[in-house]
Image (tube, rainbow, N blue to C red):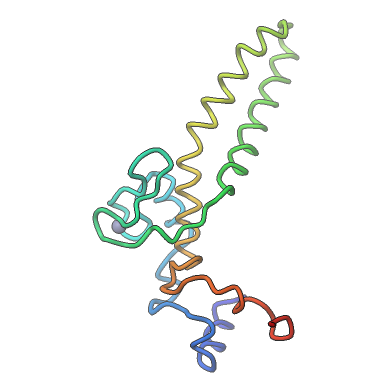
Length: 158
Ligand SMILES: [Zn+2]
């Protein structure tokens, strides 16, 4: 849905759409994802998003922006699996083309790379996902909690 469509609908049905007070353009998607990737609050870019490994702070330590609304769930692992899987598979196949290694040698190379690469990417990717959700005002980031009934077409509501 384009921005203009949302604006048209809000003028007639503000209570249903629950847009926040600030226009969507105030939360650039690329900047928000980038800040999340570097463990920064998507709002101010200064405070830390994560208090400890993979644990998102309830609020930004600098600007107080609420971050507990995120619902990253298992989306970050899907992204990490896709990235690491392609790197490891490509690396394995290239190595196999160049030199002939035993299975144990391959395991000794690729298992640590898989484990360490996944651990290294998980938090930045999760930060990026939280930044994206913040930018799109998903899951309460727009000032209201999720209400699934608002997303269903009128004929599907019970
Ligand atoms: Zn902040």
